[in-house]
Length: 414
Image 1 (cartoon, rainbow, N blue to C red):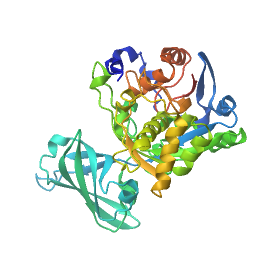
Image 2 (image 1 turned 90 degrees about the vertical axis):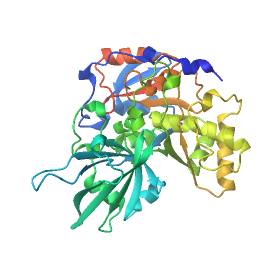
Image 3 (image 1 turned 180 degrees about the vertical axis):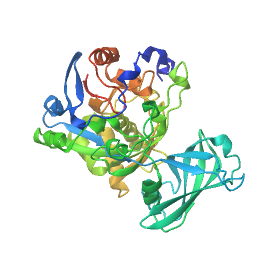
Image 4 (image 1 turned 60 degrees about the horizontal axis):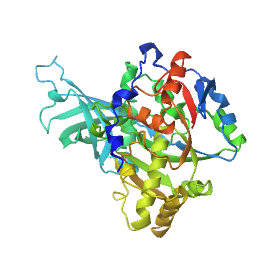
C-alpha cells in the first residue's frame, strides 16, 4: 500500500476564500455562468454555453441524475408549561434510509419508516421515546406525523417516523420538508431553491445535497452536446451530508469518508466499454462513482457471487490494490456479473477517497465547480491535475469567479 497518501497534510490544500466570493444565490440564467478551462496546463475562461465546443466529438459524458429531497424537517416538543407555552423546536435532517433501506421502497411507504438522521437541538430531546408531532395539509387532508428517537448510529441517530392519512413518505417530504441548502450559504432556504438547487435532469430521489456541477446545464446546453456528437449517459450517486464535512485531522488518515449509495445501469456499463472505458465526468460525484466501478470490477473478477455489501468500495481500497487490469476488463467483469445474475442495474455503495497519489482509470475530463479550502473535493481535483490545482484556483480568484455550490464552473483536461 502507498502509505504516503494517508500522511497527506490537509493544510497543504488551503487557500483564502473571501466571503464575498461565495455565491449565495445562483445566476438568473443557469448556463450564463463563467467557465474556467484548464487544458493541458493552460488556463483560460469562457461562458458555460461554450462547453460543448471544448469536448471531443464522439466522447461519452456521464451525469449524476440524483434528485435532492427536502431532507430538513422541523418538529416541536409537546408544551409542558400551561396553555400558552410552546415546546422546544427540534430539527431532523435525513441522511440515509434505515428501514426500509432501499430508496425507492422508502419513498412509497404510507405509514411508517426509519432514517438515520442528524438532530438539531439534540440535548432537548432527551428520552428515546419522546414523540414530536407536526401537522401538514396534503390533498385537502390533515396529516399528523410523529418522530421517535432511536439508538445512536455512528455520528447520527436512528429516527422512527409514523404518520396517518394514507399519503406516501415522498408526499410528506414534499409538503413538510425544506430543501437542505449548504450550511456555508449562511441563509435560510427559500422557495426558489426547490428549483434552482436541482439539476434539470434530476430523476432519482435520495440526495441531501445537489451534484452542483450539474446545476449549470440547461436543455439548450444538453441539445448542443447532442449536436456536437457527445454521447450522454446517467448514473446515480445519492450525495450525503458528509460532502460538506471539513477535514479536521492534520493528516487525511484521520478523516473518515462518508458512505454513499450508487446505482449504474447495465446499458451505461455497456456504453463505457464501447468508449474504451473512458468518460467525461460531470461533477465529483460522477467521478467517485466511475472510479469506484474500476475497483468493483476488479473484485467481481474473482468474486462472481458477490452481494451488494461485498462490492462496497472502502476508503483506502485504491491504495491497497495493485493491478494491471484495464478499465475495459474491469467494466466487462461488472457486465458479466449483471448478466449472470439477470440484473439491469448495479447497486452498491462507495466510500472512496481520491487524493494525490491516486491513478485515474476511467475519468479523462471533468466538469466541476470551485470547492472549499481543505476539503476532500480539493484533494480529488489535485489528484486529477497532478497537483496543479493552485494554478486553477489562483486564476479563478483573480478573475472574479464565483465559488461553491451556486458558483461558476470549470472544465479540467489534464
